[in-house]
Length: 274
Image (cartoon, rainbow, N blue to C red; front, side, top):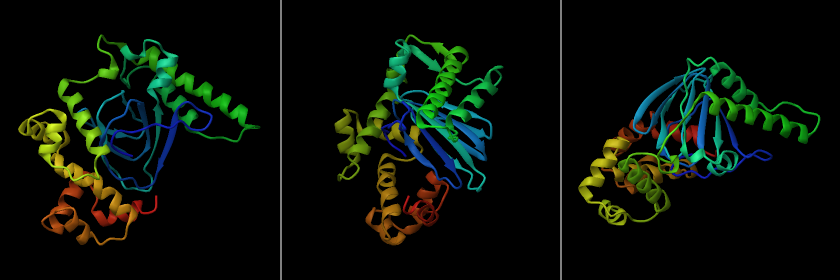
């Protein structure tokens, strides 16, 4: 998953639960309104959240608030690597907590209830055999509200600025740029066209994007396009590099490895057909 992300709840639950097992690749920086909770079960992962880097080991919870730009810069390729993700849609949180727009969540591992939170997340993500579906849903809903209770009771603060408008003006601008690139990635775009669409100067947009994303805007756009081509076609790597406008295969490989910590061929082998 990447870019501005839509969140579809699991059947019977108002949230989305995702299990990650085995080899994982990097995820381009993206954003969504949902609150995201990652629990690393084994291995480790390197995150970028609002421009800051964080390494998460087994037993660590990584919480990403609504509208924070984030991505996984690398994740160990060991077969033991596993994690679970909870995506809590913003609309669901607003209905449960009328003042949620002013709540900011932050994980503190020294809090005495941190182990309880880990247990609650694991229970919510574990599908066990139940006598019938209604009982399973009841158990999962109970676990979900325990997670919410612990987060709000022990890991939340109130802020004057609504979290649906979170971030510096630069971060808000960047989020709009990412959304535009995602929605228009199949169009023949130039840096000047994107700058004009965003009502920004070319120089400012170029500096902002490179500083925050660690690649240029046009390189990021290329990577959005290449992800799909690599995993849905058998086109040769050299041909893909040429079509995408890279001067040679080496420059393509260098950029791809910088962002995904994997060469294009390995990425294709891991994700083809998924």
